[in-house]
Length: 129
Image 1 (cartoon, helix red, strand yellow):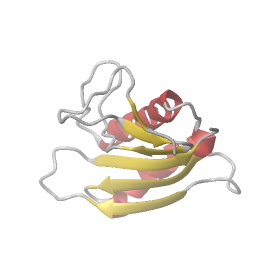
Image 2 (cartoon, helix red, strand yellow; image 1 turned 45 degrees about the horizontal axis):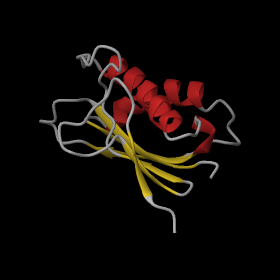
Image 3 (cartoon, helix red, strand yellow; image 1 turned 60 degrees about the horizontal axis):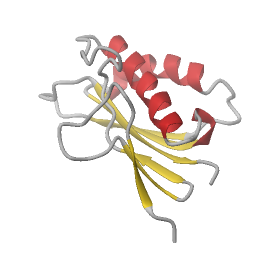
């Protein structure tokens, strides 16, 4: 059986002792990805800026695991206001996954109102072994 491998990449580190993602064989599962800028570490105060950074982080994470965004099969998002936030997600979503016949599954859930961020996510990917 394949051994588990921690996946990390420059520009994003969790405060807790956990990796950015974990891989066993060809399965990759990310930890929670926030809207922090991967270069500065700063979190924009606006939803649009955080969404842009989340998608940058998704790409960095799956590529650090040896895959590409084409390998992602499911993304879960948590948003403070899913009803109005979906529009911000949809633009970046369509840019990252432009082929409507080949997009990952997606689910959007509500973050608590007192959460310090507007959006977070995690994803699952199946990459070449």
